[in-house]
Length: 265
Image 1 (cartoon, rainbow, N blue to C red):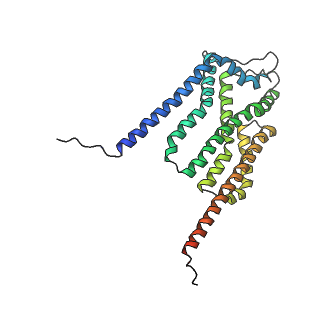
Image 2: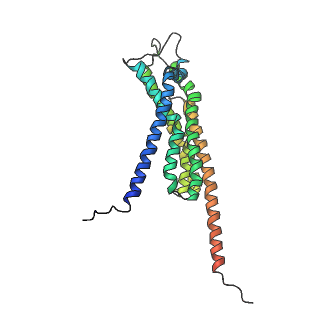
Image 3: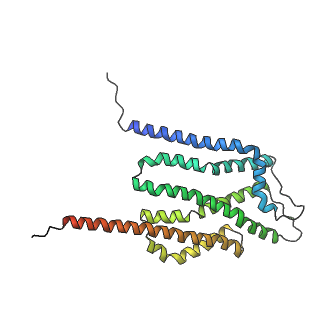
C-alpha cells in the first residue's frame, strides 16, 4: 500500500516557517548578547536616563523607590529596553532578509533607503526628546511644584514616563517615511496632501498638546518638527510621483509609436 504524497506546497511553507524561526532566534540572540554586555552598567544607564530630571530637582532632593524590588527591576527593565533599541539594525536586517526574496527589483530599490531612514529617524526622535524636550519639560514641572511640597519622583514611574515619550517621539519622527509610503503605494497623491496642510498643522499641535506638558514651549518643540518632517515627506513624495508620471508618459509614447503605421513613399 503506497503512502500518500504530501502536497507540493507543503515543503515551501515548511521552509518559510523554518527560516522565520531561525531569523527570530537570531533577533532574540542579538538582544540577549547586547543585554549581557550592558547589564553590568545597568545602574549607570539609569543614572544617565534620569539625569535630565535630577538636574532640576531641588538641592538635597532625590528620587525614591517605593517598591521592594524596584532598585533592581527598574534598571533591569531599562537595560532590556536599551538592548532592544540597540539591536534594532540587526532585527531589521533579519526582517529584510526574510521579505526581500518576495519583492520586485524596483521595490527593493525603494525599501532599503526606507529601512535605513526609518531607523535613523527613530533614533533622532529619541535624541531630540532627551536633549531638547526633557530639560524644558522637567524644568517646567519643578518650577510649578506647590510651596511646601517636595518633589520626590519614583524611579519606576519615571522610567515608564520617559519610555513612553521616547517611543512617542521616535514614532512621530517617522512621519516622512509614512508620508512617502502613502504616495508611493498610491493611497493619496501629493496634491491632496498639500491641500490638507492646514489640518496637518492643527493635528501636529494637538499631538504636541497630548504628549508634552501644558506649556507652549514644549508643545511647539514637538509640533514644529512634526510639521517640518511632514513637508519633507511631501517633498520626496512629489519626486517619486513625478518620476512615476514621467515613466508612464514615456511608456504611452512608446506604445503610440509602435501602433503608428509607417508612411507610404
